[in-house]
Image (cartoon, rainbow, N blue to C red; front, side):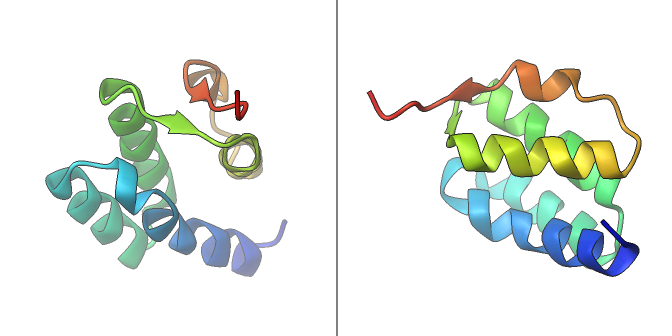
Length: 87
């Protein structure tokens, strides 16, 4: 994943998870995305999803994992997410 693709994919995250974040967290995640602070954006996004005990879809989990790997960041926070298997 090159820098442009990383930016495009990270920039799309706030809208993907908008319905599962508290308004103040969503605003902060959006701000990090706007200024290109991808690591901070994803850290806050993951923390907010975990704190709110929000589920993610398998494809969303995979996207978060891919972005963390592309940035060389720890992937363990993704393991703590609840994944909706569509039960």
